[in-house]
Image 1 (cartoon, helix red, strand yellow):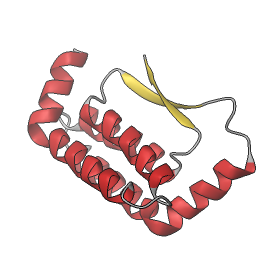
Image 2 (cartoon, rainbow, N blue to C red):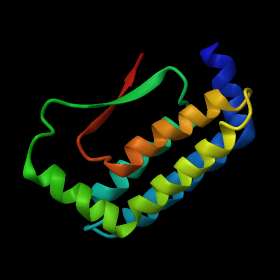
Image 3 (cartoon, rainbow, N blue to C red):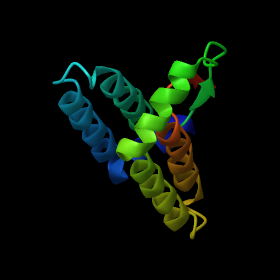
Length: 124
């Protein structure tokens, strides 16, 4: 079921989301200051390309003030807009019964878009 969900996800827009994250990541990595943010967008691209059967978890080492500072800076510089976009797509997809699984994947991407620093992608 996970494979079928991922294939349908790719056909109906998942590949576009992942490519957008990849392009954004490459644009961020052009500057030295943007490299940590580019790594986080690569993490989001990896989750956006194959979201079914994977989830994000806060890892145990994520209790430092650097993670908090970077997540706040991330939110100010555009993370809130990414999260709101995923939340909006999730709400729209959850209108129909067929779209609920895909809406839930957008909500998963919303969680990582709000605070990517200190999160890992795990396979369920």
